[in-house]
Image (cartoon, rainbow, N blue to C red; front, side, top):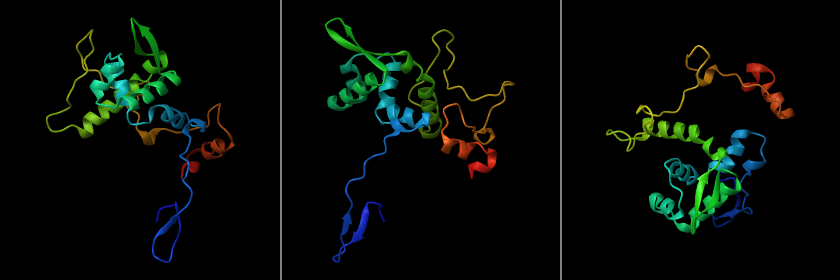
Length: 181
């Protein structure tokens, strides 16, 4: 049963509690949660995909994405507010350009793109290829590697409290592997 259903009325209908507020990820200590507060909305990574491909104009974002103008305006405004893009005067119009923070998201985009290409492309393969303009080599997301060049797998990582850890994080990750259960 849904958590929002408190009890059943005598005629079988569920009585709902007041609307639950969505979790505000931006207030969490976790940097993943905070990043998802900015990048987690489903149109955001697609807008970034377009920006990484050189799109700067509102009408070009709208046409390339097939997104409603009101939704695009809201999403671009959020990216500007979070410092991922900037809105700049470009002649008689405005352009949206990636900031340093936005450019820092390029490896994230590559990782999502590569993962999607591996797991969700049809038998014919992905619809696009990304090539390095200097070498012509395919551009892919870097895998996590050790200093010796060997790949690091998720089960080979230990999480420890960092300098910004609170007591809950210290309790969870401070005791070593036993705390991960």
